[in-house]
Image (cartoon, rainbow, N blue to C red):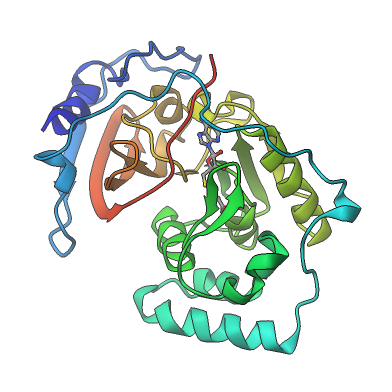
Length: 292
Ligand code: SAH
């Protein structure tokens, strides 16, 4: 209930964040107060967080451990060959969830991107199973079917400018890069950012813009974005991200909820000063961490 009220307050308080932090105001803020319209999709489970869970604060400091030194790109622990066996496994995986995805361009992207090259080689046998896998530093590469569904919700057209918060392995960024040439992705953990950069370059996605930074503040230099996807879960809607959405129909897909518990995936659509929030699915994402 607190989160629900919090989200409603977002509209009332000029998109102000509900967490402990005072978000930084950016130049794209508008004068008139936007209104938030809540619209609940009826054919998906309702938000369990609305009544049972407590909203917790985002940790003030990053929670990751700097335990490994980045290998140089040539030493990356990855399998690059896209063998017939991998292609068959990938095809079977995409077939398994393709009926859930209407956008054929998204399905085609999922069929092309070699997920096995985004994970450590010891996990290769599991590359084409439909679940998240560890990528180090306590983080995960997301479940493929969820990657597809979240990408579909973004409704990306060629030429759209897309921002991803939480590069992780770089896999989601590669899927986005199959749909538009204008992909911007940010990652807070330096080692993951560096590894993802190397993997994306090696696979031909060097046109993806990648930066190591706290994505709470988006990437204002390149705003506005037609679409924003957040792949870690904050406990409130970051105001800077709403401000960096294209006022002419920008879409954001973001999980919001308590750390380590079930969160709600939201579709946030901005039209001028009006921000509409639609509940999509119950999900479980890694925490959204913060820098000092
Ligand atoms: N999209 C990724 C999933 C990575 S998991 C993939 O396809 O592999 C989420 C990622 O978000 C983690 O790598 C985590 O370090 C990162 N993250 C968490 N908080 C962040 C923040 N404030 N800014 C940028 N990245 C963040």
